[in-house]
Image 1 (cartoon, rainbow over the protein chains, first blue to last red):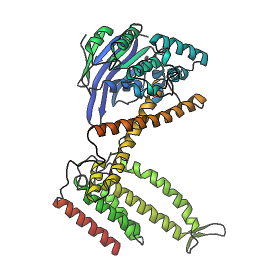
Image 2: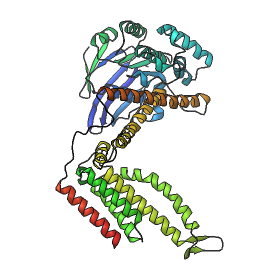
Image 3: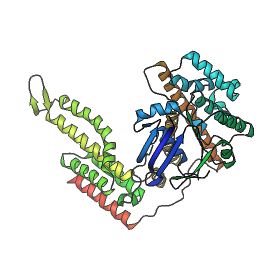
Image 4: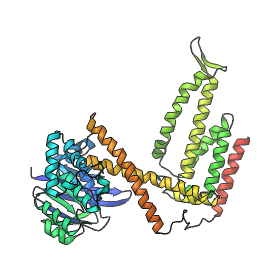
Length: 216
Length: 247
């Protein structure tokens, strides 16, 4: 299974505004892709289309070697590709950090024992063991981002889609994020920070006027 | 959620002064509800239809809005013909009597209801809510009431956006609704979080408003100017409504 994501001729419009215009994208195992582009270029839109939240006007979306068209095709995609939302507030909704991390694994059908193990492992990895019992809406911005990331990591996805994971993080949290990324093999990161992207990616694309251009 | 689907456009009804539209609408509703006989309500229905046509709205979208109301009206069609005890009956057997009067009443309600709905869509729906709120201020509706109306409306969309976000977050982590405790627990979390987040969001927005000098009412930026076209439309429309009602 070489190609994880393969998008061909993607066209997407918001009302009359063309956002993505005949866009092509390939993500193979081992690709660490950085994606930059001006505000409103359609970066988040692209991630939402991959996850099946938005339906494109035209184009083929092949994920894990199957064409994905309808809502039910995307259930498998969502179990295997992890999306970190731009706004962590839109990702966390369980009462406590622990339950939020457990949410994904439970959806994957893991048993309670397994889930407990996963929570321990993930919390250790991100150094958030002390936050586990805290309510999510009382965390700081940086803590929320880490917890959100932990919630996705807990599902052990084969590919991550990260929407501005470094925005608003302090040095320490950013180092943690970079450490985490080094342990992962396949991801696509949307970011405005070029230095950060150079450090963590082996390919950089720019999204402009609805198309992707390879910069690196 | 896009609540103002009909507000974008360039038809005659879109460019009319909202004040004229509100007056026309109010008078239309009052006369339509009070109309007697069969012909006047039917003509009002045609006028409602004509307004939608004049606003150049997509009929599919208008129909989608009318459908839920008409589903409700089906109950009138089911109940009324059996409830009226008056003669003449359309069908009369010892066990089943269908009253002509009942059918007539159901028909009237359907006509009037759809006429008013279409007029609402075509006259009020073609202005955005900010313009309507502004027009209400011109009619000396208390500023507080207008603000409440406006903020209330504004936040339906925000609530819906919050709901979509949480739903996406759940779906993104492989949530598939099943008949299980986990599913119901998740729904419980969704609703609870929706409440907390909308509350927090409203506080934040309120702070942001205060930070920019909000004093309890919205200042008005663009003022309305009555154009000859507005006066002509208002005069013509009201005359037609009066004439239909009294003849």
